[in-house]
Amino acid sequence: MLEHYNYIKALHLIFVVTWFAGLFYIPRLFIYHIEASEKPSPEKEILSKQLKLMTKRLWNIITWPSAILSTIFAIWLLILQPIWLQEPWMLVKLGFVFLLFFYHLKNHQIYNQLQRDEVKYTSRFMRLWNEGATLILFAVVFLVVLKSAFNWIFGVIGIIVLGILLMLGIRLYRRIQEKNPNA
View 1 (spheres, rainbow, N blue to C red):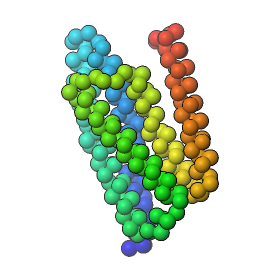
View 2 (view 1 turned 90 degrees about the vertical axis):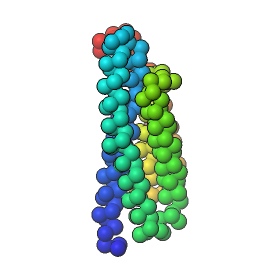
View 3 (view 1 turned 180 degrees about the horizontal axis):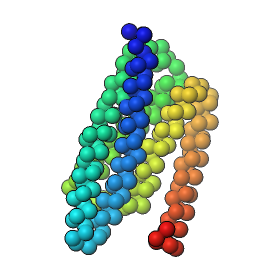
């Protein structure tokens, strides 16, 4: 079975990429849906209907299946190489994977709310929320590549700095938008 390890690893990585693609795009669709809810009729209804359909397809055809398949292949890899579970970096990585599942499930909750036309968040909040997957991705990639319990501390500090920079970038973008709405 170990001769198939690299094939399983490749499939795991492919589905991780497609899972993240869904997680990167779904909050963007949430933002559009929230902003559409503030439009006058009939624009509001037309946009809302289209965004619900787009979100439903992304969530149910790409994001959820990718999350499930990447998890199946990850478990399979750990069954083939259980020694990885003794590595400190792997335990930290699994902690970030737990955060990723929390992020995914929270997106599912927001998805369900918007499918019912319940707008509970602002587009500004969703723009910040959209960066959650990016931060988790950075953390996991650095952990997997560096495989060092010491280096991941610097990675986490880097993630925090990246988060701060992303928030500052969003603020700058918002200020530019306020000055020139067509930019």
